[in-house]
Length: 262
Ligand SMILES: Nc1ncnc2c1ncn2[C@@H]1O[C@H](COP(=O)(O)OP(=O)(O)OP(=O)(O)O)[C@@H](O)[C@H]1O
Ligand SMILES: [Mg+2]
Image (cartoon, rainbow, N blue to C red; front, side, top):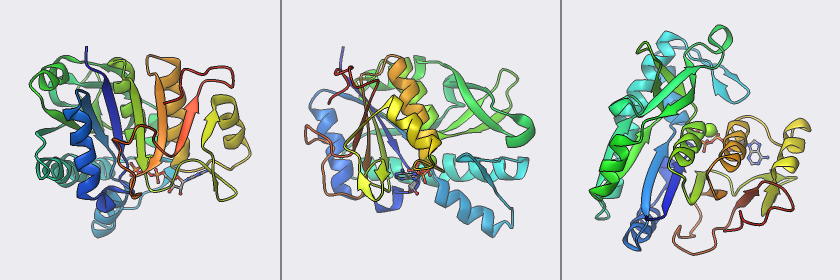
């Protein structure tokens, strides 16, 4: 079986990703690995919500999603953002297919807290059938984080948790969170590695806040499942994803667990 790399491209960094970033994804693929991309789109959603005069608030890094917000989220993520990423990959000779968690019953979710967060879902099941056939045909699936519950209602899902659920379902070799910061920062310094215990402490003392919370929570969950290695890195750095050792924050289960080192 080919090694699988799941790459989560943060909405925060999408517009800054260069063709060399996408070329390094193709290099990884050409070296015999399967690639799945999951993307966010926070800033793009904010822009459209502003144009629509719809207010949006965050609770612990998750966007409170009313029906109006959901409409904008779905439009932006499944439309503009997803297709732009697909095109960027195809411009460097890759073959990509854009889809959301709705397609092929890929992502089943349940509400996180309907009363306080509205249509925000969390993954409960991944149907691997469609992605398996796309990978077998040589495509790079590009997934927008919209999920569906058993009744067919659509939900906005934090892209970090979708990436982790997919990485777990497919037993990914690596889960890479590409974002707009170099990794987990403490007093402006990059932590080259962090254990789950350290991360819990950094959340408690407020060092990790906002959008970094769902990211590290997703990272930690994936490590207790089938994922071997997790790194948070900057998409704007010159570093190629293909360069063996990725520079960023490597997250591992505990000080004694060495298998997470990339
Ligand atoms: N300790 C920390 N170290 C680094 N960044 C942190 C920390 N705590 C909070 N952050 C914030 O987390 C942000 C990254 O998460 P954010 O959700 O904004 O981006 P993303 O997940 O890449 O994009 P999207 O949510 O659109 O997919 C950083 O820009 C920073 O503001
Ligand atoms: Mg985020």
